[in-house]
Amino acid sequence: MMRALNARFAGVRDRLAGRSDAGVTLVELLVVMVVTSVMATAVMITVLQALRATRSADGRQDRAAQARIALDGATTVLRTASLYTNSDGVDVPAFDRITPTEVVFRGNLSNIATTSGAADAAPTLFRITLDTSDPQDSKLVEQRWKSTTRDRSGNWVYPSSVTSTRVLAHRAQAVDGAVFTPFAAADVTTVIDAEQISSTVPRAADRSVTPAGLKSVVGIRVSLAVTPPVGETGDAATFSNYVDFVSKVG
Image 1 (cartoon, rainbow, N blue to C red):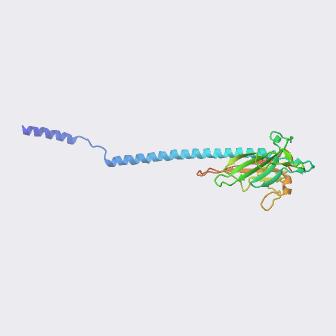
Image 2 (image 1 turned 180 degrees about the horizontal axis):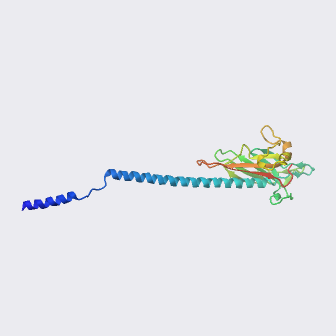
Image 3 (image 1 turned 90 degrees about the horizontal axis):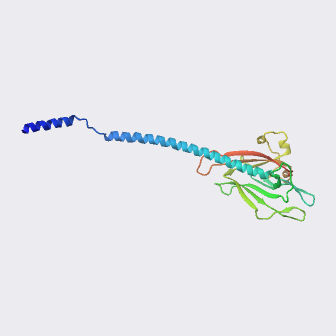
């Protein structure tokens, strides 16, 4: 009987030994994990690159939009520049100061929507300047002063406090060292492309326009670059526009 049981157990043991019940080895599991990690990493890199490219494109469009809006704002008010005649019959030039990064002038706001000089109760004093006090966010800023009084010579008197201030652009920079480039009549009569004009307006040693030069100005080129925010990469959006004036300025 014992012999028969041993024979039966031996048969079961042989059948179990012959069955293919081998599982996944540790090495195979590690290989699968490594391959899966490599594939996941490749997919992640592709996705991140696509997101970075999209963000970069959006950033360029945003900078371009900011530069266009700022340029439109600056050129709109510059176009209103106008001289006025005081009560002594003396013509007072529109521009008080022009440097590569600043213009100070009197403007006739009635000229914004017209193509010919219209009367304005009192010219507004404008100052448009590149404010670099914050090295990480230089700004193109417009300031306005409104006057309602004249002095004894009939010159408009402006208050010391600013009437209004607005930022035209953040992260603004000059282009080739200048935001504002003034031109005389001789500069523009024979040149079609304003980007190629060379200015002959007289300047002082600090590159500001001389008093005589202020009287000769007939147009100004405004050039502006808007750079990416700190921490972002990409090219600056650069735009330029030539402005002529509705009224006589000098």
